[in-house]
Amino acid sequence: MTARFMKGTTMEALEAEMQRIPGFGPRKSGVIRSRYSLRDLKGANCPWEEKKTEAVEKNEAFYQSLLQLLAAELPEGTFLVRVMKLQNRREAEQRFFRNEEHRRRFLLLLRCGLFPGLRTDPGFAAAVFLLSSDAGLWEQAVPHVSERGIDYKAFHVHGVDLDGYAIFCAAKELGTGKPYLKLSELGDAELIHDGLLLLILHSILISRHGIGIIYGEEEETC
Image (tube, rainbow, N blue to C red):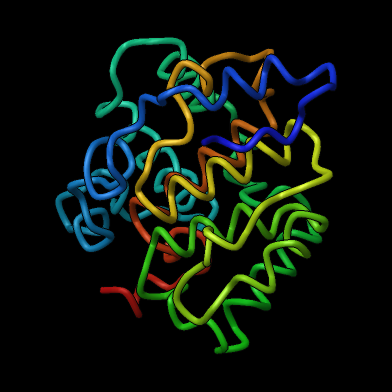
């Protein structure tokens, strides 16, 4: 039986809608996992590997290429439209993290060496990336996070707002491969605002290509 966290509140109906059977494919296929590896993205024949005079230009081209690959594998719908719009937002790749606190927290987890799964399991890395974006949600998650996974059977969120619940659902899907969000929900700007969509979108890119896309780990992952 699906748990209800917002029962009796004004967000009860939205929570029920979010817990319907989602439209994402399994984590190892469909839009979650790409058929392209980071090595493929850095290939000599790829347009984003052309020599440039500015590192910023190379990073921007690489980021835009990731969005293009994702868009190419999405079915037609409002989520695809929103992804395509993000390709025109030059500031998007410049704020890959939700905020500076999120950046410091996640990079500390990555660098401390206590969670090797962040480097070897893109789904785990994507889930931690999402959960660590919210201080309160991360505090609840910490007791259930191990070196290479998250115990979702014991991890039950409470006291979170709609954004926090959406982050939890997205993290759980990316970490387990089981569906918890619909593509139509990601396409609904009233349910998932632009800032939250960008955060979830970046976690999807991590789940597809690994942490190398945000931390300069390309040499280690090749």
